[in-house]
Amino acid sequence: MTDTKKSQHGEWSSRFAFILAATGSAVGLGNIWKFPYITGENGGGAFVIVYLLCVLLIGIPIMMAETMLGRRSRQNPINTMITLVDEAGADKNWHYLGWMGVAAGFLILSYYSVIAGWASAYVLKAFTGSFFGADAAAIKVIFDDFVASPAKLLFWHSLFMLATMLIVVRGVNTGLEKAVRFLMPSLFVLLILMVAYAMTTDTYDQGVKFLFTPDFSKLTGNGVLTAMGHAFFTLSLGMGAIMVYGSYLPKDVSISKTVFLIAGTDTVVALLAGIAIFPIVFASGLEPAAGPGLIFQTLPIAFGNMTGGWFFGILFFVMLVFAALSSSISLIEPAVAWLVENKDMSREQACIWSGSITWLLGFGTIFSFNVWSEFKIFDRTIFQLLDYLTANLMLPIGGFCIAVFAGWIMKQQYTEHELDMPNALSYQAWQILIRYVAPAAVFLVFLHVVGVL
Picture 1 (cartoon, rainbow, N blue to C red):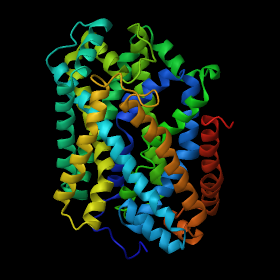
Picture 2: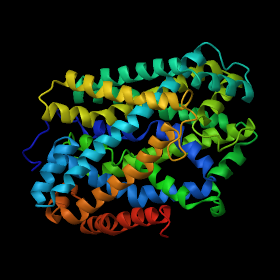
Picture 3: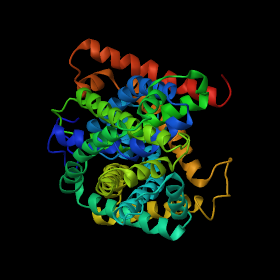
């Protein structure tokens, strides 16, 4: 099929371009904002070990499968599943897998954009010297006052969504590809600088010990689910992003080699973020389990008290916004591609529709930090519910279905042809992981969560 079929949206110009785009989708707020605080909430080292195992045994095989599905069809996730289900002669209900992925991307971006707006606002705060000489208590006041204002959160949420749409509207080559070529490389350099600063603190060893020394008594079944959910979240699995990016992938690019490189880079960034942040957490007398505001209450302390902190503070939050943008464009692209392919819309019209709906959904997250903070559904705020629903339920369920479809429904000759593994042993190892290990792991964790195990 892929020998002749081309995506109507274009293709990545090279393997490097796809690596940058997919890594950009994976590397973002999930690594630098979310990974440290959920690690802190779940006891540190034991959680990290489970997370790394989830990436290796579940995340990478499913990422290979999702990329393969996209490249074989060369369409948006919804049409991809329709085409491949028909090709396999499978039950039509498999079509809903594509819809669930696009819906998950929409829901994630609705709150992701709000958090990215925080980072955008902190660029200005760093520039105006708000963190200069501030201690932990002062930084907490700055953060609390900011999230308590719906108007401020709405402004920065709107600005970030506008930036996302301006990139996506330009298409694959002149929009997505050019953006990630500019956005991605600097983040690594800045994180390394932050790690170097963390090494100068007296609590560096304490932070590293917390991150890498396992204490399984602190890990709960829900913590295991969170680790697995974050493996899906940070690799952008089950949300249609990798599938649609795969549809733009040239035929001569090795899926397996590329996915290992993307997953490895993503994991290194997450660990570097933890190494940079936790020593500052302990040095400042903060709690590792501070929650979603952790990064906004730790790094500003460092920037306010380190030599050159004004410059590095601005640069860090600018790079954090760039990392968020590289992910947000991948979250909205599946919906835009579907509207273009199915509703006879121009790319501009598709961006306006999808962006406007996502922007409106973001109001729920904005208000959950202030005027609706007492409003709970299943004992969670709207933001917490959206985060739990997507990262811990929709993405793992989507990944489970992708594994079953790629491992059991698609014909082996097609998967073998698309993956083009270096040898038969590598393909057999992937088959074992995608058919048995990944689905079983997801299923067992869900049984534990619902109280069966």
